[in-house]
Image (cartoon, rainbow, N blue to C red; front, side, top):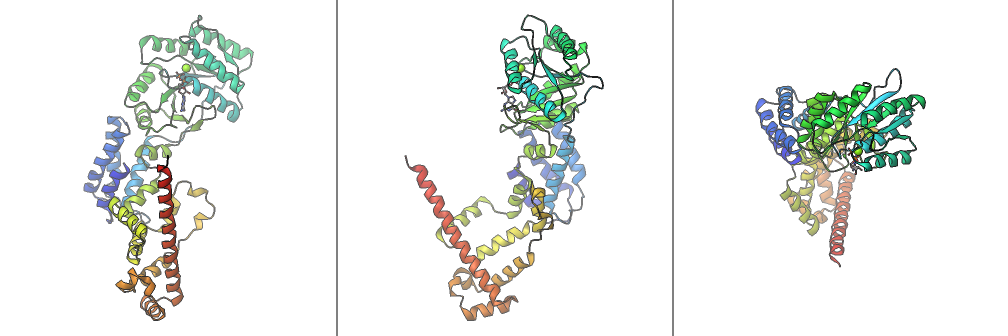
Length: 439
Ligand code: GDP
Ligand code: MG
């Protein structure tokens, strides 16, 4: 999406209000990007409609360029659609709390049962009992027992010959006797939804209405995720979704689809196979991920800086051949300035809130203006060969730009330092390349 949006952002840059045509044009790209991230078509349509309604005619916020503003709307809307942060769990007023884990085979039910039990113990001071109700694969019981051992949590299992319903009944008895305040039922899955499985899950649910029924979904599941979620939700009435394998490189469009189709909150996300790899769900992070932006900034930067690939290559060539001039410097500077007020941009950086003192940061834009003025006061020859700038020339430039000789000296020094640094960088790159080629 980054590249796509970029193109459109270019088009609508520099307007004070967002027009209907702008939005229409941009939504084509957004639509395509969401579909590529495996978001369900129906969901995409609704989303595009919402965003369009919200964006058209909006005044562009003072601190943002129109392009930044549109990204903000797209992201806000996406975040909203995924619901708030809801990592709380409903506990029974009279323990034990029953949590039933359901989902397709391989989704991560057993693993997530262990992870969640770990969270319940650590964060909520609970004393969970894990119940092995997947009797169809002997390995499944073993797997849960191994996790239990690893976490020092008890696992209730009766082997593969007792029915899941009977296992759960006895587990609930056992939990009462042993004062477990949470019972987590790890159920069986199938590769595809089938009636026998659904009936079994309904029977388990009927023993004692669970306080939570969590649908475990593999984030890599594409379009099918919606059908799966819908089916489980309609049959069992799930209370929340746990999204696993987000440590992979999936865009995670499934998250958006599931949330929007079932209206059930995504509670936690699995970020790895280890027992501590379970995190609260952050809708905003997910929105960035689905849109394919590492962060908002990189996109804005790219969109605003206008550096198309050709220009970047040109620049690299200039670095390499040491023919970088003050004209190039000026161009770079104006690109940076186009991005908007620098201190505002800094604050938008993800994680910026954590950097101490940044809230009071004030980038000296006057300084940038001074630099520009100095360069404008140079002759063409001086810009390409600054070596010729001697005393009298410095005096002339300072006068022409309304600055001091010290200012001019400082800029010349900065420019020289920059060139040196570039030289080092390109040398290093070339050395690196050579190294890689060696056997
Ligand atoms: P189940 O059939 O639904 O019980 O699925 P399992 O819990 O057995 O998990 C299937 C596979 O997915 C196992 O190899 C897990 O280690 C792996 N897995 C589960 N959750 C995650 C996760 O969040 N990240 C990664 N990378 N792997 C996971
Ligand atoms: Mg399992």
